[in-house]
Image (cartoon, rainbow, N blue to C red):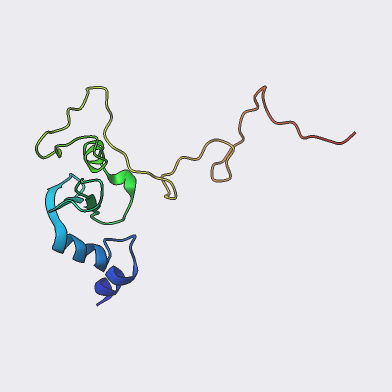
Length: 133
């Protein structure tokens, strides 16, 4: 029962009831990425652009930084073919995808921030407070 209520009232944990209904009625499953996110495209193009709409149903928390580069390119019409048909060629210098860690305990906190111990080193361009004459 709690899972059903969570689906109805919270969009940040998963797709809303409206999105799930729209997906079932008008979507075609195109593929799934390594995070378990599912990608869909409209069966028939709607709207003035003539393009089929594309969307994602997240596996878990809705966070845009969890979309891999190849699927991001397909969602934004950079690539015509999805990664399931035309796999993305990674370069040897590319690093594995990392999600956005802002707001988590693993977020970056520079030296001198309130969340990090220590003081920031002074630089030659530091701010000097204005004082009236």
